[in-house]
Length: 394
Image (cartoon, rainbow, N blue to C red; front, side):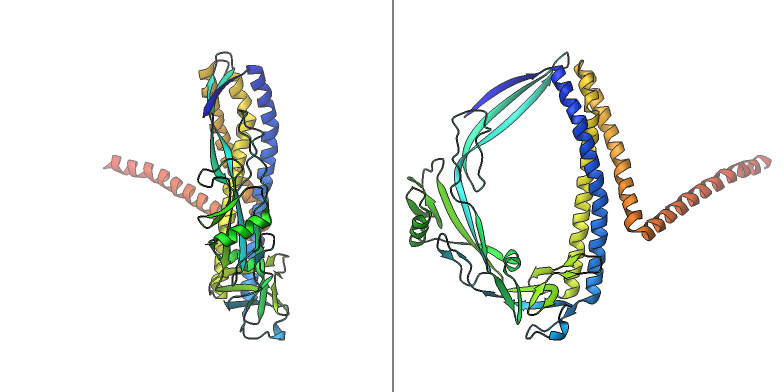
């Protein structure tokens, strides 16, 4: 089920769009430069707080709470015992022994897919041929059909949402940790619903359709084997956590975020038994990954910003299509060069601001290496005439 739509954009409309892109490009450029600078500061502060924490942390016995460690950064590790039972009070489903319970609601909906092909025309206009196709699928995300190009593919509003139900807290020996934090560490596995469970869910949800248990889920449909748009199916997952390790500030019997001297908060958590050293190493690795991910994202954003700024040149060149293609290629190269110049420069300036000693040391090493290379090249250049003269005298 599909249809094709052809639209033509005049050269003047494209020119107007390119002017808007210039404004957007400058905004994106400024935002990404700020992002790169901020990221270096975030990375340094996180690194220093982790180094500080690694030097202060004390591993304690979980059998009892020592008042002498009040307010200190402590490490605990051991079996996890949930306090209470996570329960969906609305639908009457619970998970005994779990640290968390998730309700997953899917609706059978229309989905629109599109594929476009744009052709440049002499004079600078563009012709775009777009093919729209429609299919039905189960999806827990509510898909709005208001923007669909072809009418007749209407999705109703999702009558009930996903939800999470962690325990209020969990105990590791004599210590108490936040239940949601524990639930986020757990292993998820489905809870198969019986016919009785499905009936109870149906009575509580009152969705106006008969309910049946199918594949461990509660399915609201007049024909579960042949679902229609608007049908609902509800599944549940439990989160189980047998052992865990935490690093945080001891406050009575609880662990809370520990504030380091630079204002950063530390609260480390991992499933399983891990010593403090391993947990801080993992945290440092995560900090490095985040730093590089933001750096790459910032550089990509700067490139897109420059591409937007220069896009008007390609539109002007598109009066003759092949010239526009050449201009677009050239502006892309310029955008890439500027990105590779400005991006690292911003990072370098941030290093000077946040890591002045390291930045100066790297700068001195770089200058020394450059001077050494120049010196060696001059030495070779000076030696060449002497060798040539000696051979001539032989």
